Image (cartoon, rainbow, N blue to C red; front, top):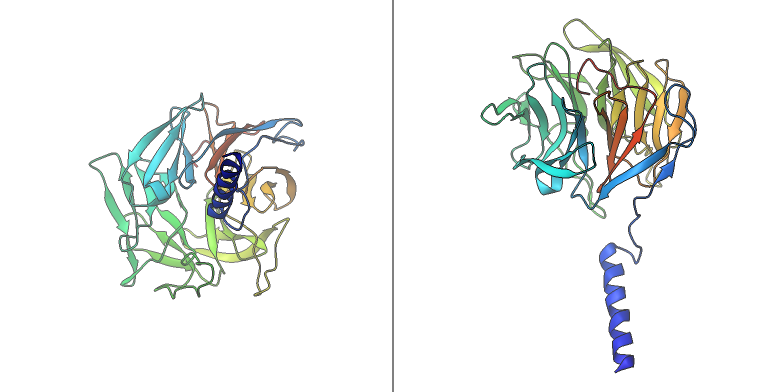
Length: 329
């Protein structure tokens, strides 16, 4: 009987490891400790684990009451985290929402990624749902990722191309990777091409500069914004501290979400944690994490709490710096 029980436990353990992939357990979310970044974070500050086990973690954005919402794309919902780390469902049936932004009217705009129904549009409040764009020159978007809304109500968003499936060639998308701008009440304009995999997107506080994370590149990109919302003067703004060079060629920086603070510093999610750059592109320091992050946002009544989501987990850390207060993100 004892041998049978032991054998059954061995089989069960093997099945669990196999289900987790390759006999390896998935990484666990754990508290980490920051070193000092002057003006940004004090030495010894803890990066707190709020909760793990979410079904996808993307699109965090601060709410007017100081709470935070983020998207669980795989669960087709938006989840809220309050000041006491309690979670609740904010919105269901979100059409696979990923990136989130608020406009000046208080409407929540999302990148919606359900195959066949991909669009950029208003998803909340209920009854005000609207499509802002679902195609470019008659071609549907593949899988847009992130967005940011300017003070005029124009929407910048990234189209990185389809997600790759291990062991299979990537599908041919109807549109190549690019960055788009939807002017208020207008049609989508393609404003930047030739970026290997544009991902996180953000505006400087003065809205004179557009930042774009390039997951398959070595640099955060920056563009000057023209009066009509289009961009020019593309340049390498800052080099990612850690970039892999896959055997197949190219680069993998792990670059994803972006955020800015009130002093114009840029917070960049890429391999190694959350990297903080000065407005001139100088690396000031890194906030370390136990898991690879996906996206970030400032929240809280004073906007001095940085929330970080990724790999099914959510974290938060108290900063000396405060997020930009001119828009939700």
